[in-house]
Length: 162
Image 1 (cartoon, rainbow, N blue to C red):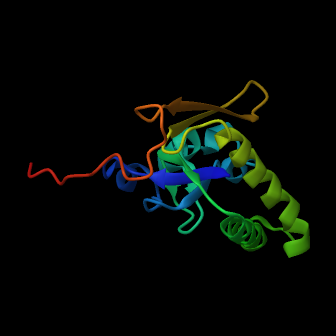
Image 2 (image 1 turned 90 degrees about the vertical axis):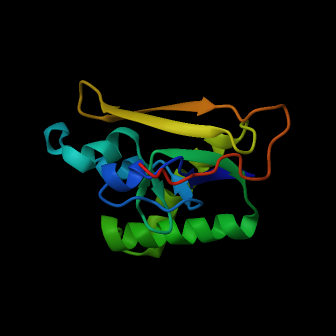
C-alpha cells in the first residue's frame, strides 16, 4: 500500500503557509478544510494553503509537495484514527463513530491516488473554486528517476550562505 508523505525542497513552506508541515508527515489532500469557505474569504496565507497545500497529519500544517511512500496496515489504522479525531476536534463531528466514515473516505482517496505511482513519485496539488464556488482539485506527478522505486532520500536541503 502507498500513501502520501510530506517533503520539502527548501524552506519556502515556512513562509507561505500559516503553519507548515514538517518533512515526512503522512498527508492527505485536506480540501475538506475549505469546503465551507466562500471564494472571497480565501486570501493571504489561507489562499496559499487552498491553492496548493497538502495537509500533514502530525502538525496539521501544509506542504507544497508530497511523495508516494509505502505503509502497512498498522500505520494506516493510525492515520484513520488521527484524522477521525481531527474531524471531531476541529470540524464539528459529534463523535468518533460519526467522523470515521469521512476519515476513511479521505484516506481511500489518497491510496487510490498513489496506487500506480512508484515510491518517491512527487505529487503537487492545484485547487480552485469552480463557477458554483465548489472546490476542484488537480494533481500532478513528477516521476522518480529510474525504473525502480528508490527507498532512500533522493533530495537534500543545503543552507545557502547568502
